[in-house]
Image (cartoon, rainbow, N blue to C red; front, side, top):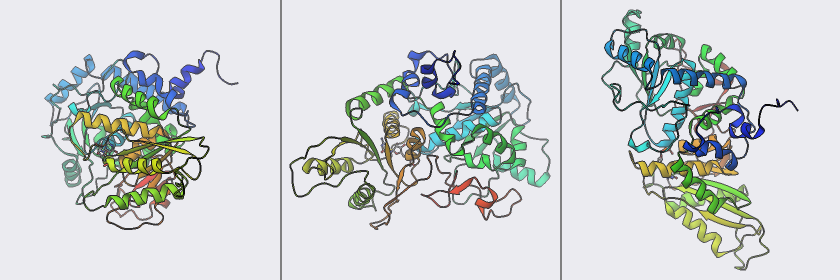
Length: 471
Ligand code: GDP
């Protein structure tokens, strides 16, 4: 046994193998100490290097975070030298939201990794819609950008795109600003952003405050940068575990969220022999008939024996022994209701008892709505506790669940019309989120052709061939 005598095994489980730091007030964030009781132990241990980088980050955040002298001195200097550039004690990275909660969470994890790699303090611009969803992730500090900060929702600052243009024109980096807005959100017409390139990073490194807006999981682009690559490879010897580790490090349900999650789990899911998560996301509800979606879900789950066939010959149950609980996450109640009806009317051929639960059905996506986001977070978290997970292709909501739970999901094909798909779903090769819109050019401007031979650790995503993820 190589466990040092002073390491309490129970603490090691609680702290997820050293991923989390000790010293938190346990009552302030119960999920942090209880999550390991609900989730299977991860087979992926955080590397000693990742652990040391996290402890180092925490030290910087404690020293430079809001309400510290270093914070006030640095921020004042930045504010007074907006367009002139300044060398400050601490450097910052402000995260701003774009798109739905799933997009925001995968992007926030990527942004945190970028903050670690560039020795910046991560501050998040959380509006009311995200109040009370998550615990504070960093010991003795806050990651929330103070509402009175002059950089809250500050869009009248120089942009990264203009900086690149100026740099190309003059090749001079003398008049760098102190504050820069980087928009990495995907739009169809965008020019290449070259964010993965050493030259861009050299420029950005000199700017004390960056504000980043994106809905992308841009972690693979950090691997594409030779300097960052060395670091991230050391931090993540298993490349497909980046979100799994960083997601479990950052996203702890607040006490309010945890009560709802753990109560629901205990009441409905805990006693089942097996838990199945079904995430049914319909991107174009008007043009996608519900029956087509239902057919796809059943075709996938029955074919792969995730759910059993019903016995249409009889309504009498056999000697039913095992219970499978199915957690349906969807905006629409019809999917849960259909499944419930199907398994209530007839017994299953396998003899299993199927219980179907759907915690919410919001009908449509809502923006800037705290209660709505809470329901989304609860659904994502409960899905992540499944033994087997079926998700919808392209949905970042599903990515969060699979990443937190270390689950390789069955990906349902994205239905646009009433089309029939064979196969209806496919098993993903890892739990990492997909980077939907990666760079299309090498840093010298040439089009990026054979990605896999240039970057052997990247693969096209199964659910979106243009997208990339690490293997
Ligand atoms: P994506 O659009 O599927 O990639 O996921 P996002 O999370 O970025 O955006 C979808 C948003 O719609 C979610 O954040 C929720 O607000 C809402 N939503 C979609 N599907 C569900 C669901 O199954 N349950 C709940 N509670 N909300 C959902």
